[in-house]
Image (cartoon, rainbow, N blue to C red):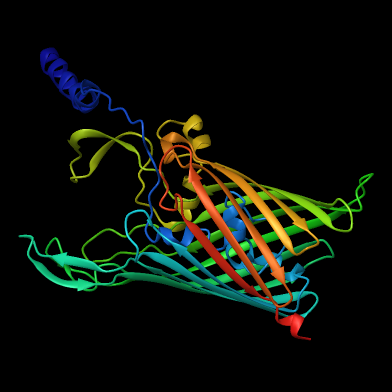
Length: 394
């Protein structure tokens, strides 16, 4: 009887030890690159030449028509009653000449305390030849994506404003073709932005006028998307952006401003899996990190503590950028900036510069980007923005 108890105890103990022993017997995987990927990444592309020339910063800069992308709450502090802009941004210009993004945005202020805004973003992937499984061409198509935005911004105090925005997202990359035996379809989603903007006047000796601004924008809070009914849905790029701006007038003709922006994707980080290991349900076994197949809300909170490398990797998920702008007589501007991303999370590092010109009703801005490490799709590409000041007609 005593032997039976011993054998039973050993079997029970083995039932607990063997699964762990199997896991620890495997060679722990390593991962040097763990970039966060999402669907519809075109929503994160800086659409305007002004922000693009300043290292892709703008969450706390002075309000302009492109505030719909950077921080909708800035529109309540816009000096003009109405504005409109059109931008064109070539994509992968060094490889192809028919991929690019078009952006339209505008705003209107019914009074000095509130503003409404709109934006349309269209991303064309050019002409693509689709083939079947044997490589035979089946037709030429032009995949495309677009988003349509509307926003409302209001001053809460003389120094603080808040804004909300709604966004419809449409992505048609496969145009109904069969993907791995499954019929595909366009992906759609609805998303929202929540933002704050604070500005205060400073009294600094030897400066005629100076301001300190702070901005916060959580954008693209929305449902996951999928391109087939059989695939698992993917997160859209919910993004946290916050930063500050310091601007001042040197004299009646010269002014300067400096931006500092920090961003972080609020979607789960991919964990590290054991190679060729699955559990009883057929799911891959996680070595480090957390299960990324969670809801949108849980994914936002989980994004702050789910990196496989712990706190040190979480810090690498924050990108930062610096930007500077000089204006002469509020008619001619010179801009420059720098953008930095960890090598583990994509390794985007580039410098930007550009210029702007305002004359009466019209304004023209351009930006140029030069990569210092990993090549950017915008490397050595000139992008343009044309602005219209309707208040000048008066």
